[in-house]
Image (cartoon, rainbow, N blue to C red; front, top):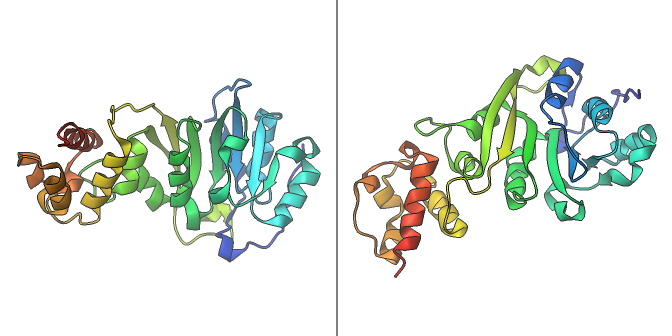
Length: 263
């Protein structure tokens, strides 16, 4: 089996930190379920290919790689000639996942400087992305998994949890990376649950959540004043609460209440 060369210098501007602990790689790959021909696995930011080696062992045919750094595109194409048509030199934030047939499971040690944007990108394609297994800064991973009442709970937590079940899997110390980041990392798993909270109008829900959490210290009555006036909503006890006190379900129910009372 090919062992990728890990002697490349990390590009700071791309947020590169290369994973060099193979036991972490196997733990990540073990989270991927058995897949059929209708599902592809996409590794985002494979870099020198330490995780790629284990993905290729498990999924030799249905593996795709998206890598922005030309050095690694060339190296990986040589190491994995059978994947040459499935290695894309591309910016993942501009990548069209509809160009790949079937569903896409996203996996990777995601570049930390764009990790939240990758999650918002996954939300844009949520019907096509049944699962995401990713390494993030621990603080970011905790934010995605946070429940209401927690100070980390916010817009990202809610929009992800509205459509995905989130599991925080394990911590990863800085020592397993080259160069080591200054923070702990964490691996999380997202599993898509199609509109599990029965959101009536996605746009209204997103608008309401952003309005509420952009002024998270205020009560819902103050932060949602413009929507309450627009929809001519009657006052209710829920508006006395601050947004972080409300669960995802309560926020969905409130957004649905706005939709149902549209004049």
